Length: 490
Image 1 (cartoon, helix red, strand yellow):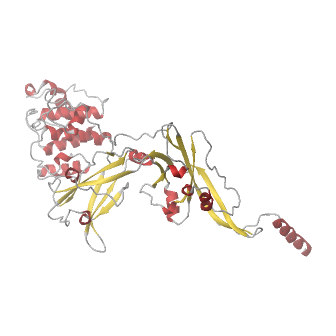
Image 2 (cartoon, helix red, strand yellow; image 1 turned 30 degrees about the vertical axis):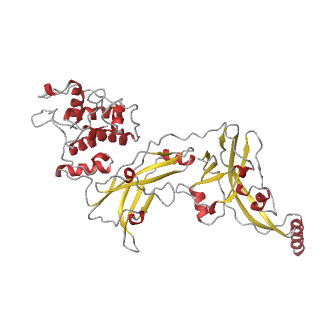
Image 3 (tube, one colour; image 1 turned 180 degrees about the vertical axis):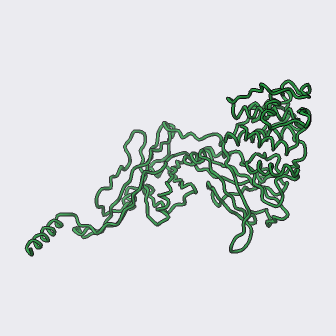
């Protein structure tokens, strides 16, 4: 038995003599292919590579794992510049290797860089980065790829030397820029997201501050993979003009970033003075932005308006309407033009057109583009032009909209009827079986379908005698209630 044990130990010792001897290797992370990789040209003619990492990669970075990223490139149909395999033991580390190749920019420690809220990172590439005098985007196409690497130290006992081993992971998709690969950035942003806000107090000082959250639409997230997108908050106090209208600074984070939550102290933003929530009402709205290669900024429409303060979003409302108005406001159905208004007053054609457009956009979850060219000579309001494009209104003549005229009940019914048809064009809009109103003779021919259909749905009802009262004006609070009921019916 003793001889068997000795023989076994001798065999094991002989076997180890013929195997490479390394110190015990550390556990390596299992990393995946990068989530997305795109390229674009900035306003100075430089290449910007945009990396987006998964939440898992970001968590590893936060946990202190030194994840490296390695860039490779080629021009036109040429070979990849490096295409390294990183097999086996290397006495030379990654940074030392790339420095010897005069391509020190090609490998980076991800944890050394600031990442945006959506895990995105921009890397600038200059002509000298690729050992070129200049980029020629008209005649050449530049291709890039990158992958994650994990480098760790090992000791080769046989050679009695310390060195490195590299774990290489799958390459990203290829990003191309130039002659055969133009990155198409949109000319507009259609979605604006939904903003929510509240007043809080800091635990350490007790001072008040504003806290906001917003949803980021999927289309914005996809755009943010291609180029840096950021959001900013517009503001006003009471009945003053919006900061954007006065040329004042809008609220952003310290850097341009795409955030889904933010807090800030107005006293630090300049020009605000102290927060006096008992005396003032603060209004906020948000928009998304990005910069095109020519330096121009593209903006989304503004979001819903958030009001913070003791004042309601309206100056005055009937008691019976307050609950419905609050519900409509929380659902984003109150247009900006009615924020701070006396809701007991009759509503104008302009105000109602904005309400109808807001109803459509919130129901179909899509921003409508204004009609172009503008057929009206008495308004340039984009919300009215949206209503015209949707067929909600045709104006009071071919060239006039008459925005300040008060809207009556038959006009209100017709515009809502057309709004419902724009939302659900294939629904049943039959008015068969709906009897004439006692005052049917007072209803305009063009309003017959709309008045009967809205009556059929129970949204706009008659008086106690069954009269529709087509020429009676409508108050803002009644119109908001119609909008709520119409959305539910649609």
